[in-house]
Each structure stands twice: as C-alpha cells, then as structure tokens.
Image (cartoon, rainbow, N blue to C red):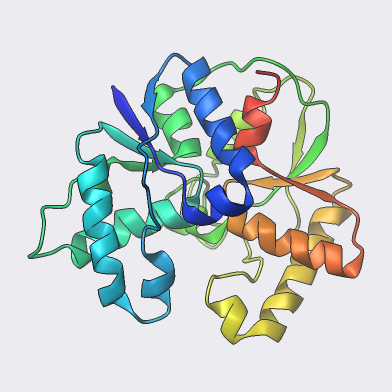
Length: 245
C-alpha cells in the first residue's frame, strides 16, 4: 500500500519533530511512505472562522496531491477529522472527493490498518494520556465517557507496547482542554481556565509527561503550564512510539 504523509502546517512550523517521528516510524515498519512536497494548510482555520469558501481551493489542492495514495496519514486528529468530515461537502459539485475515506490519524492507522503488536526501544516514564475531542468523538480513537459503550482506547493500546512505560488518565479523562481553535481566540478567559483545570488534573496523576495525538491540544496546555509555572512536560504520542529508533 502507498501512504501519503500529510504534515499539517502548524506541525511543520511549530513541532517539526512530530512529523519526523511519524515518517521514521512508518519507514521502520517497512511501509511505502511518501511526503509530497508543496503541501499547504487543509483549510480548517478558514472554515472554523466562518470563511468556508476560502477553504475550498485548499481542499481541491489536497485532493489532487493525495488522490493516488491508498492512505493519507497525519499526526493530527483535528486536521484529519476536518478532511474526513468536511471535504465531501466542500468539494460537492466541484471535484470527486476520494481523500476523505483514505485520511487517517497515525494512531488509528497503526492500530487498525497496520495492527502494530510490538515496538522497539523503551520509554521508562509515567505519562498522562490526553484524549483530544476530535479524536474521541469524530475519529473514534477512544470511547466517549458520556456514551454507554464498551471502553477502548487505541492510543493507550499502542503506548503500552513501549517497554517501561506507565500510562494513566486524569479525572474527567476526555473533557476538552479548552483550545478548540477559534474558541481559544473568541473566549480567551474561558479557554485559559479550562486549560488550567485540565493541566492540573494531568499533574494530579503524578505523571512526568502529558501525551496525546494532537499537537494543538498539547500546545495549548503547554502554554498554560509554562505561563503558570506548572511543572509537567508535553510530548506527542507518536514521539513516544518512535523513541529509540
């Protein structure tokens, strides 16, 4: 299978090591992965701000760039969810949308398609797992606490393949951290307080790190922690999975 690696703009600009870790891990697993050059934003910020028409040309470019791959894999649940859920509607009547069905967050791809059963190296640390809203409720990476369904967590399943790791979850484990893209701009005070509450719950687990599948949530919480002098580190889940390669 041919995999197209999609690295969202904010990951490329702020957390390039997450993109590198994703590529290294996929190559280590023997997969045929390509990083197409000249990638752009998927259009999520424009659409979230109420300017959907500005997102359409970006969706069309994304479709052209990734149309010939079997899977489009990204280390970002929010961007992946935007492609999967919104592209069919944005491209309706303009272009056949093939990428929506192919787009997968790297956690879901490793868990559901590759079915990874072992990982090299070790990560001898206690980590608190952050279940991002898009991952829980739009991509199905874990079971929503508000629904009466069997409990599962694909992120935790993969993390526990690393030798020496201890994975814990905070109280109210899938409550929003307060980022929410435009929400953090339009409702700054509420967003900040939600972030403080969430970080404190992660700290209460006794973990050294907070981890999760989305840099945007981790970025928000890391900013909250730094500003208030709260001592805990933040690391993307794929960085842990790829550690030791």
